[in-house]
Amino acid sequence: MATEKKEKKAPSSVKAAESKPAKPRAPRAKKADAPVARLRIKVRAYEHKVLDASVKQILDTALRYDAKVAGPIPLPTEIKKYTVNRSTFIYKDAREQFEMRIHKRVIDILDPTPKVIEALTNLSLPSGVTIDVKMA
Image (cartoon, rainbow, N blue to C red; front, top):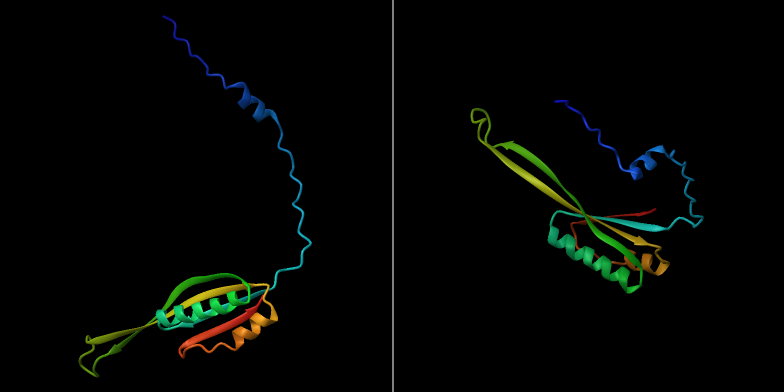
């Protein structure tokens, strides 16, 4: 008995693909358009209900003037934890833990008009809500 090994042949389409050299790609053409003006609003608060209400107020104001809005985008909640001794001296094992949660949202307004910017500056938001506005 003769043992013969049969070699498997690859299909012709695979051989054809292997023999062709890769063509260098042409670089993509960059757009000559002017960069899009963007108003980035970061809103922060300790209570998420107050934060969501103020974000809704900002969105309503922006949409009233037909501005393009991206967001609100929730950012990770920042948690600050504090551990404090309950009493002094002997009872070191007795401790209390406190935490502050800072909720954050980001809103982008694309191509803001002066009317939109003026309306956003005249908004009265509840206390405890912090706003950072940047032009990008």
